[in-house]
Amino acid sequence: MPAPERIPTGRLSAMDPVVEPVEPAGPLPGPAAAQEPPGPGPERATGLSDAFLADGELTVRGQITGASNAVLYCTVERGGRTGACVYKPVAGERPLWDFPDGTLAQREVAAYEISRACGWDLIPTTVLRDGPYGTGMVQEWIEAPGDDGADTAEDEIPELLALVEDEEPGPGWKAVGFAETGQGRTALLVHADDPRLRRLAVLDAVINNGDRKGGHLLPAAGGRFFAIDHGVTFNAEDKLRTLLWGWAGEPLTDEALKVLRDLQKALEAAAPLAARLAELITDAEIEALRARVAGLLRTGRHPEPSGQWPAIPWPPV
Picture (cartoon, rainbow, N blue to C red):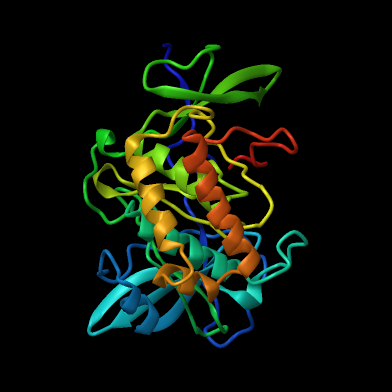
């Protein structure tokens, strides 16, 4: 396989999030011009718990630019420890005609609850709480490898996506489809044949993720990665749009089948997970969630594109 034209790991746009300072007592920020990202900041706690994010003192430090909804960079302090997080207030959400019920923030928390129930630790700790701009989603900030000042070897950063000039993916890669790269050139978009990425493909099918872009995969220290931005999930209608179609139609792994069987039990009406989801999404969406899990168990295979709408989100970043 020739040296591929790599899409930068984690964020297809090859851009780190840019944060612009905001006035702590000012109005909810709107679109802003990009400025330099913040420095490392205070010493931060890692692996933040639900209680830490939910109960700590939340302070807005800046706005992450380029997002379609308000996304605020914050610190949270509790018991003498400080952590970094993202705060998405409901007041900063733009209405979506095909998601008329609930809020994006609630869906983000519901996605985290499902990820945690699966035991895959793919989504950073996420809670729903009050903040300086009202109720919103608060999620642990994921430092990119090296951003904390520590030396990071290249082989510790997972390669997840790439563009290649061949018509077939090489060993260790799965094909997604062809993409125009400019100047009349076409390249094959591929993603890694990585078991963690495969788990994410299953999770996205379960939560009916309508917007799995490359920029939503964040590399972390130790070769790990996390998935973010789950506001357009759990629709009662099939809306799966993703870059992770490489396993479409293939049999699910034994691990995935076991996780789905356990999840099916956890979604029964009297179970704690079902009660928690009832606080976040509608009854119809919970029934559709149960149906998707049952469908995956019935077929035993990764879903395939329906053909009723574009299967890959646009823009893919």
